[in-house]
Amino acid sequence: MKQKLRNSLKYSTYRRLSRAKRFVLNRRGDGVHSPYAFRLISKVIRNPYPYTCFEPLARAGRERAEALRSEYGDRCIYRRRVLELVFRLVMDHRPDRVFVLAPHESLLPLYVQAISPALQMTHISRLDNPAAAHIATADFIIVEDMMEEEFVLLEQMLLAACEVGELKQVLINRSNPMLRRYSQHLRSVLRPDVAFDLLHLELWVWREAITPGRYKVYY
Image (cartoon, rainbow, N blue to C red):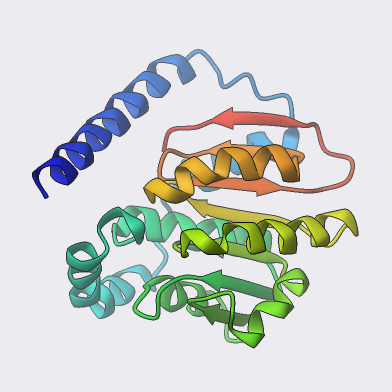
């Protein structure tokens, strides 16, 4: 337990230092040559617009956030700032169908469903759920937490969707230690056109006629 706590504190310190470093470097410009990436960084990622639903969502999820923090730690997204960023990213891409791979107690469905009543969301906690077969039909896929033995299956499902041009956006919870390590391999296999490293999250985008790139962004 003590070792786990030390590792958690080390990573927390690393994230704060990384954010400070990116802030200093990005003051001179992000080196962004893609109009899509520039708009997403400046208008969405770094623009914490206070949507009217944020306060009610925070109140509704406060107790659950504490429970997630206690039970799952960084395996789940419980920080309000990160949840609101997920909301903004999903909302900006205007998906018709969102697929969420996360524990039953996750706060992500609460935030995703608040975007629009017309948005279709599928939330499962394991890939052995029959609904997992529809992952390729989703416009936006969010992976918050999963079992390590499911990594190969997820890779196969996403790769199959990628090969037929159906993969559009994938958002990974980089605060999750297992997913942070696994995402490096998965990114090299799926080869997204654009990747955004957001410290807590990683967003991959596949889109025609877009300037390829990988950006490390603070927010």
